[in-house]
Structures are given as C-alpha cells and as structure tokens.
Image 1 (spheres, rainbow, N blue to C red):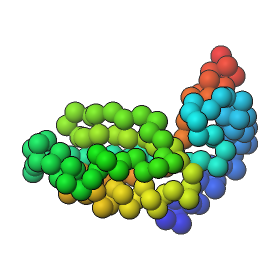
Image 2 (image 1 turned 90 degrees about the vertical axis):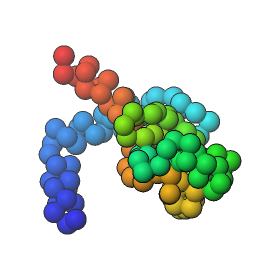
Image 3 (image 1 turned 60 degrees about the vertical axis):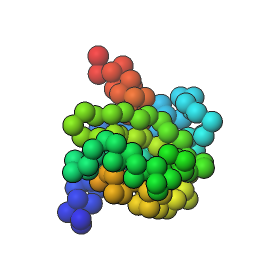
Amino acid sequence: MSTRRSLWKAVAALPFLTGWLAAGRRAKAQSAPSSSVTNSGVMMMTIFLRHDQSKTVDQINEHLKATGWFRDFPPPGVEVVSWYVMMGIGQVVTLRFPPDRLRDVNRLVEGEAWGGYRTEFYPTYDFRPVYAQLQQRMR
C-alpha cells in the first residue's frame, strides 16, 4: 500500500500533471451539476455487482426480493448516476452521494445484495470535463 501511495505522490508532483489536474478541477467547477445533488461535498462510487453464477437469474432475484434489495436500494440521499448490465459479468452501478452516506451504502450492499452478487467497490470521478480540457489544449 505504501508503494502505491509513493507512486501517486510522485506522479502528482510532476509539473504537467499538476496543471492537468488543476484544469480538471476548474472544468468540474464550471460544469453544471447533472443532478439535484450538488458536486460540492459529494463522492462517486462504482459498484460491480457480479452475478453468482451458481444461481439462475430467477434465484438471484428471489434472494434480492427476500432481502429487500429492490425496496431499499439506493438508500435515501444516494443518487444512481448510471446502471448498466455487462453480459457475462453482472451489473455496474455508479452512485453519487455525500461522504457521510458511505457506510449506509456499504451496509445495504452487504446486508441485501450479498448472496446474489459478489461485489467490488471503486471510487469514481467524472473525467469528461478533464478530457474536454485536454482535447482543447493538446490539439
């Protein structure tokens, strides 16, 4: 873990990357929020809901129904930014929420999705404004 942190510190210290990151922050600040949740004080997370392939889809859905998944997800104050099916893998859900809701998201997934899905969590951010800035600058 410390090697990974050292690598990120070294990369962040590179002059061109510092300017690139600042451009991304400026672009993000200038872009309008895409939802009722403002971009200030929120985080995004992508969750891979990998199907338990030892069960049929009907069995998975029965498990999710029994645990309350369909009723409770997403928890209050959590916005679904995107939700895609990846054939052969499962579902990929990106959420936006205030950081103090992180535990609620985690507990809901642990309590209701596990048994139907294996899960992976990834902190996420919107790269589109950064990429647009890079396109303009690199032409």
